[in-house]
Image (cartoon, rainbow, N blue to C red; front, side, top):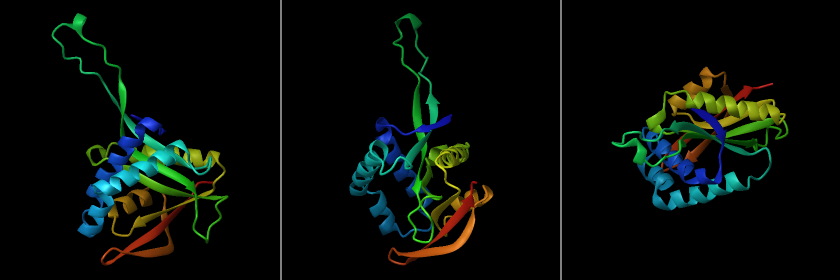
Length: 194
């Protein structure tokens, strides 16, 4: 298990991880229609293009995509080891995080970063991947000179809000309301990493 910078060959896995995480994590509080739009086939193509761009040509050197990986061991179950084809170990992407300078007008992008995405594949939750991604993100942000980090989360995403609060994040009073057939409230959380 570990965290590394995302590579071009990760685009497909990053996209499918995002789709699965959204379907699982948002199913209890987002209306079905908008959730299906966000995770359907047409949206998946758009997300794939956006992740490709974010990974291969980020807008600034301070924008990054990180992935949590688990090591996949080759299947050693063969009847005759001398005839077995060697299969190299590989990494399976099981989560992702992205960050960059914050864009909200009330914060300074020179000192405040935004955690844009933090998602774990639902089949790999509760294994420490979120904590590893968050710690690696903070390490990169400190190296880039940021002192504060903000992120926007759905107010009803109790799992994410609870996770971030347990890591020292708190609401800063900023909120927005999305129209998804009914009002969906988002809150901004912040933490000091100086």
